[in-house]
Each structure stands twice: as C-alpha cells, then as structure tokens.
Amino acid sequence: MSSFADIVLPAVARLNLRGRLAHARATTLLVAVGLLATTLAVVVALGPARAPMLGGFIRIDATSRLFLVVVNAIFLGIAGYVWNRVSAAPALHVRATRFVTLTLAFLAAANTVLVGNHLLLLWVALEATTLAAAPLIVRPGVRASQQASWRYLLFSSVGLGLVLLGFGCLARGMEADGHVPTFFIDRLPEVASGHANIWTKLGLSFVLLGLGTKLGLAPMYSWLPEAYDEAPPAVTALLAAVQFNCALVVLFRIVHVYRPQNGSVIAGVLLAMGLASMGVSTLNLIATRNLKRLIAYASINHAGVIAIGLGVGKSAAYGLLLYVVSNAFIKAILFLTAGQIKAHYRTKDTRQIAGLLKHLPYSGVFLMVGTFALLGFPPFGSFLGELLVLSALVSSNQMLVFAAFCVLVTMSFVATGRTIFPMIWGHRKEAQAWPRQTFVSVLPKIVFLFVLLALGLYIPPVINGLMREVASSLGGA
Image (tube, rainbow, N blue to C red; front, side):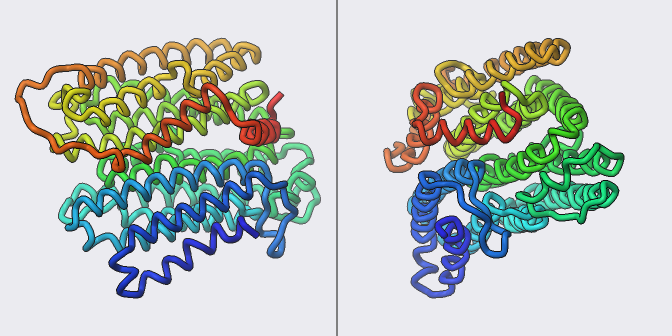
C-alpha cells in the first residue's frame, strides 16, 4: 500500500495546514512530505509489480515504479529549493501557506496519475494537476502572469477535452469490434486487439493531439513558453519536470495498448508532431533573448525528440526512456538556476547577463553543466538516448526524418550555445557585488546533477531493469 500512501500523504498534510503552527512551518512540512513520498516511492520501486487494488483503480507496474521515483525525487528537490528561498526571504512567508497547499494537492494528483489503472481516473487526476498549478503561475501584481495562467488553463482544458473526446471514440471502436467498452488499463489489451477501425483511429488521433497539447507539442504549444516564463522558478520546474512526466505516462499507457494494431496511426501522428515541434522551437531558439523562454523552447525541442522516439518505438524505446528521465532532471536544474540568476541580475535578458562563473560560481556551473546535458554532450544520459533514437530512425528506414532531425538538432545546438555560453564566460561591463550563495541553497541541484551524471555513467541495476521493462511495454526490441 506504499503507492496509495504517496497519494494520501500529501492530501493529509494539506489538511494539517489549518493549524497556526503549520502555517508558520509550511515549507518545512513541504520538505517533510517530499522526503516521505520519495522514500515510499523508492520502497515501491524496489518491490515487485502488484495486482490491481482498490477495486482495480490502482495498479503498480514497471512504469509506475520508475516514474514514482523520478517525480517524487524531483519534487523533493524543488521543495528544498522553496524552503531555502522562504528561509532567506522572510517576506515570502505571507504566501508560503497558499503555495504549499496547492503544491501538495498537485503532488497528490500527480502520484494518482502514475499509479492509476483507469483512463478516466488518469484524466481526472491530470486535470487536477492543472487546476492546482494554474493559480501557482500567478505572481501578485504582475498582470502578464495572470494572462499566462489563463492561457495555460485554456490550452490544458482544450487538450484534455480532446483526450476525453478521444476516449469516447475509442469506446465506440470497442463496441464496433463487438466488445464491451472498458477503460481499465490492464483489461484494455483484450478489447483493443481487434482490427483497426475508423473510430479507433479517430480516437487515437484526438488522444495524441490532446496529450501533445499538454506536453507542449506543436501545433498547440504556444502556452508553454509564456507559462514557463511568467511562473515562479519552482512552479516552472513543477510544470516542466513533474507534470510533463505525468502527461507522458498517460501517453505511454495509450501507446502500450494500441500500438500492436494501430502502429501506423501512432507513428504518423507522433512523428509529425515531433518534427513540427523541433522546427518551431529551433526557430524561436534563434530569435529569443529571454533566458527562461530559451529553456522553455529547448523543452519543446526535447518534447519533439521524445515524440519522435516514441513514434519509432522498437530499438528507440530504451534510449527514449533514458532521454526522458535525464531530461526531467536537466529541466529542474536549469529552471531553478534561471530563477536564481534572474533574482541576482534583475533581468531575464541574456544580453545583460555575463560572467556567471565569476559572480555566481554555483549558478554558473549549474547553467554550464545543465546546458551541456541539454545539448546532448557525453557523458550525460541525454547523449546516449539521442544516439539510440537516431540509430532507430536509420534501422527503421526513416531517412527523411533522420535528416530533418539532424539538421534541427544542429541548428538548436548552435542557437542555444551562442546565447548561453557568453553568459557563463563573458565579462560584465559593470562591476557589482553579489550576495554569496550558500551550499545549502544549491544542495537540491547538486543532487540532481549527481543523478544526471549517474544516468550517463552508471545506472543502478534496479533502475536499469525498470527502464528495460517500460521500454519493452512501449514496443522496445
């Protein structure tokens, strides 16, 4: 029942925020919940897969076990970042309780997505993460953040509306094949094994487009750079590294069930969205001079790579998993670092930021290493993951996709490096004294960096085994 505790624990902690003492120590409670949730996630990951429980609505499989660890570990790091920020700036205590309340609700919903065994439960939980995150994007007195929040809520609702419409079409497809419709994921392979029909194809197209909207894939991606830019750094990290992976798990569930009979539909839609996403993100990477938007567009680029890897399947599946997990920690490091840089320089304009290694050594190192990982340098897991996706494209005879992929990756590499590297090594025109960064303030990012390096150099057998099981469920060879 450890997985069920990952859902209940944040909800119970949220209720306990009513007390005056809890109000005063809200961020400490957030860290404590994150630590307990991560511990429980590790216990679940080390244990065996489990049969459905609670009426069949909760199930623990390899995908659940892997992503429970990833999501809760990143959440713990973000909680540590928030605790340090509030401790260093007492003025933030005023809004801490509201933030912690919404964040705990977000975590409970996110863990529900990861262990849910019913498509409608996953849909409701994913929508709950949206409703909890939308108010967190708003910064008091900043109108642009309010607009970004509404835009995020609108696009997310439309995307999840398309997913729900797709579920309806899938149910109609099951009926057309003579089966009683069900949305229990462990039972779906039995009723979705018939010949592909128009209702199933239509339903899959709607589901993929809707989840693509949630992941920030083209054509419905425009909410992402605005929301990521305007949200506080911790909220951006939650959206990019936690909610993104929850939506991805839902997509994995759909691909696992429907790829055997509808592989061409899934591959076609995902490859098209992936290439389009890489294209629009590359063009924007060339043009933008806003640090957080730069990382946001790089995130869209990475989402495109993930969509292409998932569309190809086969030998790309393991590389895709390695890329996904690495990408989660990369985004957490970069967005939290971008928030620290903006707080010191009072700007997000990359042309006004220089000499990070000299003025803000910790942030300079994290931005440098995070950028190397972002661009797919060895020894990071993103390098091997990208290489395996490219290899799968060649072995699948997708040479046009391979060529476009290589061109777009090279362009994004040059555009990102051209903007970020002068920030790290350049010289600032005006001398200025900066407050010294403490080791405690950067401890979460140090842990993230350690995990990121481990994924490229040595993956523990337990995690490697889980990744291979998940890759196999996605059609991995």
